[in-house]
Image (cartoon, rainbow, N blue to C red; front, side, top):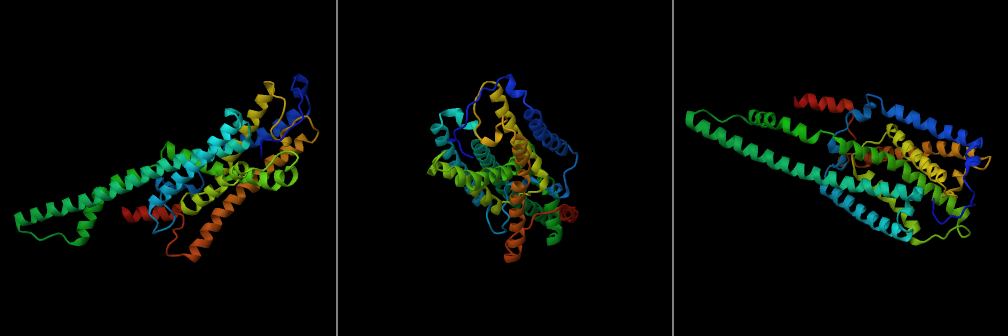
Length: 343
């Protein structure tokens, strides 16, 4: 998906929108959009997401890896992508850069890493504060018990009673700080699932379709153009290797809504007088337009599925190669059993 592609100009007057291809293509993109909205409006998410908590957003999936390393990686990824995005906007004369799906996706991944950096920093701060609070509560409890025992001549509490009392005092605060999933957490998870499919669609179309068939005559492959079609997927995949976030097919509707929004954006611009399309398969004047739109709708399934398979392959491979270091995702049943043990 690249911008320097030149297209045939054609006036988008009223006769253009009265073609039979227009309502057919509109139906092709609106049906998946309606289904996606209906799925997301379900009251209860699938079982793998019932165990989703705020800690999954900033704790690594590696037992001995400090969360600060995930924070540093996300901050570096955000800084690198923001630097490239600045040069893209400067090269393409400002907001015109966002005329293309590539820049939409690249900006979305940049926003994801900005939000992920903030949530990781907040999680690390809460984690460090909680450890300090627990240690303080433990020392204060032991001092208080020691003074009371010295005054009435009784013996110290045994270790099990001491640990139980300390855990009872801090249980409520831990649960409120660690497991609360607010608006920002839901937003980050939604953006993560959207990026998973969008980067696959962007990079696969660019490297497998545009570069082999249009390179040279239509556009030139530069270092900047190659970077924006590679860095987005590389950083996101590395983040998936490190993080504990769940990725299921339930996130596909976010990806569909994202792509439909871009197509509607292009239709609105052409209705306002724009005369060329950034990608030839969006052109509505050809009799093959419905087939192109139908293929574009279908390609969302394998693009999102590739990323789901990558995450599943990560869990399957690392849990067998590094059974003592890799932490498998927590499911609903294991979470319920853990909460029962805590109570």
